[in-house]
Structures are given as C-alpha cells and as structure tokens.
Length: 136
Image (tube, rainbow, N blue to C red; front, top):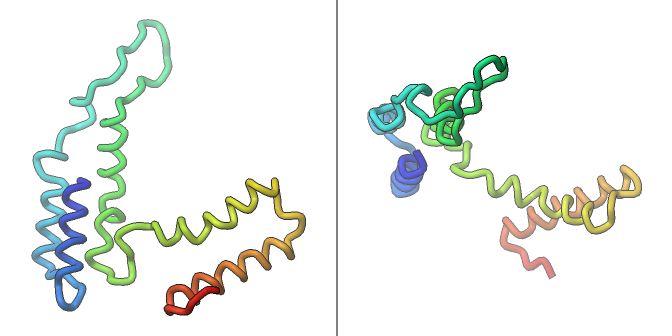
C-alpha cells in the first residue's frame, strides 16, 4: 500500500495539470484491493483463544493494518481525486508542533490570551515563510 501511494503521488506530481485520469485512479484503487490486499482477516496470525475465557482474540499488527486499509480505502486514496488534499499531513503536524513544544517546555499556557497570541504569531510566521519573506 505504501508503494502504491508513493507511486500514485509521483504520477500526480509529474502530470502537467496535477491531476490523474479517471482510468489511472481506478487502476490504483484496483491494485489497492487486489490480490495482495484481498486476504481476509482469518489468514492473519492471531493469538490462540484460551478455552473458557470470553475475551476478544487479539489480532496481529498486520491484521489491524489490513482492517484499517479496508475500512478507510476511500480516504487513503483521496489525494489523486481532489487536488486540494495533500499527499501527507506533514504541514499540519509542523503547524501544531511549535505550540506543543512551547507547552511542554513551559508546562502550560498561563492564559487563553497567551495561547491565542502564540498561535497568531506562529501563523503569521508560517504565512511569511510560505510567501518567501525573510523571517528575521
């Protein structure tokens, strides 16, 4: 699935209009649910059930990942259809990282006004950096 997503992102980046043809999107979806992903949960190794216990049987990591891919396939492969959806969420994570680091160092924000000011400042700095201004 990782290889498929990276390959689809590469094709999307190389296309002149930053869009893929519907046939290419369908081919990506077909290979996502193709033979390598079509195994049912029963084929993944799980912990043995203890006789007399009524607990849920633990799934393997591969079983959990397969189930997540199966349930969220449309969301995982949304970026080729909609140009406003990024391939990764790194930008979002970078935007909140500064506030979380500040919160960890200081322990907390002392007031909501200070937290709002920190968010406004970081937002302004991010916008300036994206537009190519020198932050210093």
